[in-house]
Amino acid sequence: MKPKPDINRLAELAEVVKSSIVPVFGEATDAINEAINAAVEEQQEKGSDAPLRVTLSIRVVWDTSGDTVDISLPVPVKRTFTANRKMPDHKQTNLPLDGDVSGEDANPKPWDRYREDKTRKLAAKVLSLPEVNPELHNAAVTRAAARGIEYVDALMEIAKESGGGQ
Image 1 (spheres, rainbow, N blue to C red):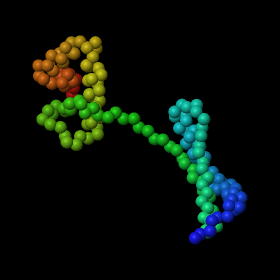
Image 2 (image 1 turned 90 degrees about the vertical axis):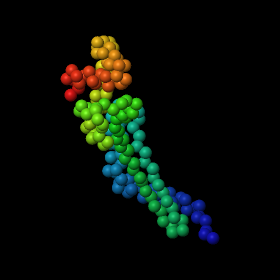
Image 3 (image 1 turned 45 degrees about the vertical axis):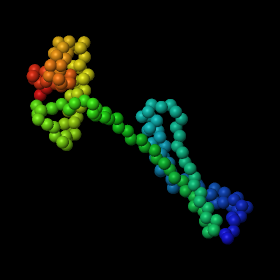
């Protein structure tokens, strides 16, 4: 059975940690400054007035059987990278883009997907509003009902016929 550590040695442990932490901070200065700069950048990007905080935790591992102490100072550099993207609407029917109504490419290129999404947004946002163009709206409604197709598809057909969908 291993002997228990002498609790009276806690004062010695505290002294070892106290005398060792200053050099550890010296080694970590660049990383700490980087963490502070990252926090400042993030705060500025968010336009926040919240207090600027950088968390530093001193870690002490005492091996009582070998009488060794490991003192470490992990410095987390928090960087947040964001992207905001629109998910494709799978409820919408696929529009043929280059006059090809026979079928679509099984693996569309990213540019084709971008064009398709942009076309859908434009058709839905601008041309589907009856107040914007009542004649076009009525023509698309009539065509969609007569042909059994989606309203947006009818708008695309009308646009292509008038030279606007090429």
